[in-house]
Image (cartoon, rainbow over all chains, first blue to last red; front, side, top):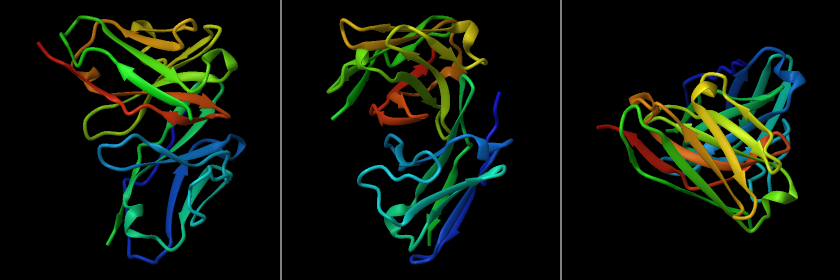
Length: 106
Length: 117
C-alpha cells in the first residue's frame, strides 16, 4: 500500500508561516490534497490537486507538490487555524492518508 | 448543497458484523463520482476503508478487503458498509464522503461505532 509521512506536530506563533510537509514515493507525480480537522468535527478539504483552494478557504492556505514531497503552507497563521492536518493522495486504486500533523498556534 | 448522513448501530459485539448506511441528499448518486467510507479510531488518524461508484465498481483497503463489502442503492440514493468479524480494533468514528477529482470534497458528520460485549 502507498505510504504518506507527515511530522506529528508543529508549533507556530500567530502571524507566522506554518509549513507542513507530506512525503511519499514519487508523490509529485500524483495529486496531493490536504484536509483540516478540528476536535469533534469532520475533516474539511483545504487544498486539492496540489495547489487549488475550494470555495470559502482563505487565501492564506496554499499548496505545492514536487518530487517526493507535498507542502501545505499557511501564511499569517491565526488561532482559528489550530487543528490536525492530513495529506491525501490517490495511487492507482488506493486512497492514502498521511498520519496527520497537529498544528498548535502558540 | 451535497449532504451525507451516516446511520447505524453505535455498539457492535465482537465477532459480529458492523453495518452502516450513508444517505445522500442534494445530489444524485447516479450523476457520477465515487462514494467512500473513512474511519478514525479514537485519538488516531484517518484510514480509508473503500469507495464505490454508482454502478457498483468498488475499491477496498487491502487490509480490510477480506471482511468488507460496500454496496450502493441508487433507488434510495444511499450506499452502505458491511464489516464482518469485528474486534475492538474496529472501534472508530466512521465517516462517509463523496470522492471526486481524487479528493473527498463532501463529508458526513461521522458516527461512532464501539465494538464491545
